[in-house]
Image (cartoon, rainbow, N blue to C red; front, side, top):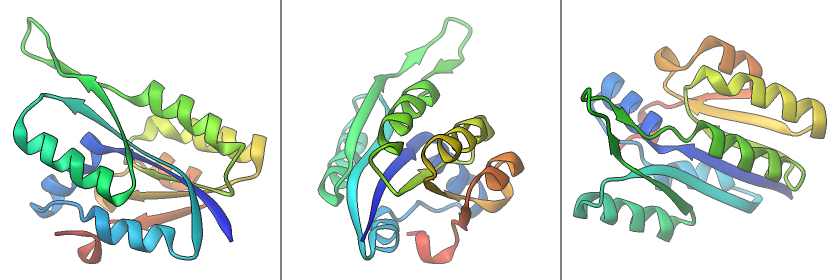
Length: 157
């Protein structure tokens, strides 16, 4: 059986599914699909911590599915913008797990990850799967993945 490691850019998935479908991503359906006949060696969901009860409930749902939750504090800048980027953290974890897994799954549409996917495929010969909303996933990320799996009706609540 293949060993799989899963990495979720929670903010990216939340906003892209909301923008394209006005719906939420179905993490349980995703988990069933992505882990079928595979051994999960790691599963991390990266999110921003605002500390509200809805968010805590969502994090508990993810934990119950099988994800480790990694949180960064929500930072509001004086100009009104917000900061909460997990790109470096995701990258470091993916590099670590690429040596332990046969398949790396990334849930994000962020084109910044194309270099990461190309690098781990060269270094470790892993298969890479990207789940994303088709019209909001960077073409460079789609091209860097071994397989692109579009988030569609069956992966939405």
